[in-house]
Image 1 (cartoon, rainbow, N blue to C red):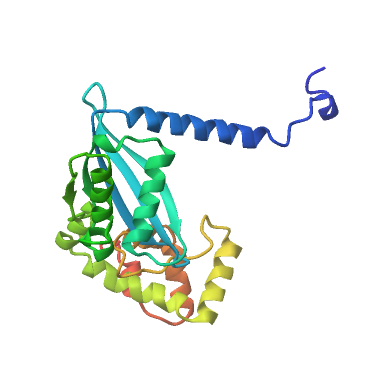
Image 2 (image 1 turned 120 degrees about the vertical axis):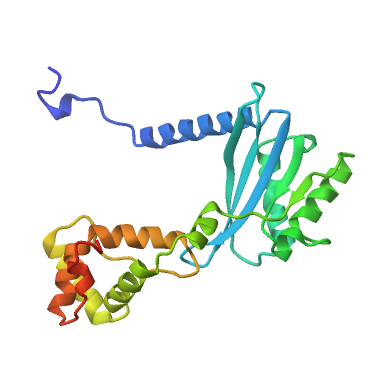
Length: 243
């Protein structure tokens, strides 16, 4: 009888999960290939360092399909372990185009930031793309070297100083002192809260502010109790209007 004995159930294949993941990946790739067959395509390349200082290159493809709908897909995430010259980055771009069997003739524009490795006239990604187009007798794509994140524009107009001048010192008080950090982690563990630690704020990455603030807000009662236990006065943490 079903459910009467776990031993009566058919054994699960050790590869079942892997197969499902493989089918999911194939389905996603198929969808990307289908969306990439439209008449006009724009490629966007951007590099960013991860927490281990390895460069991660994100390559997006944007364009229109047969129904004139705008589509945008992450074509590839390539890790660059060594140097990050224009030739290194362009090699990853070419690899992605070849892997996805994309048609260079449909490439209408290339968007990058203003880094020399991207827009260099001799060995940059844009220069490499133009040379590739010349090989196939295709017209050069429009090069747009002013990739600006909406978040970067937003942070110029939002005034967060009144909040960050309280949050950052509190976070640094906990994270910058090894003893405080260990005690705070133990404190959270004893309370069995959703998070086991608080996040550092990195000034160079505006997006980190959102993550820091979200975590700080979720742990506000615990942060407040901890700093009080350390005889550190932060009256704003108890101020309902500041919250």
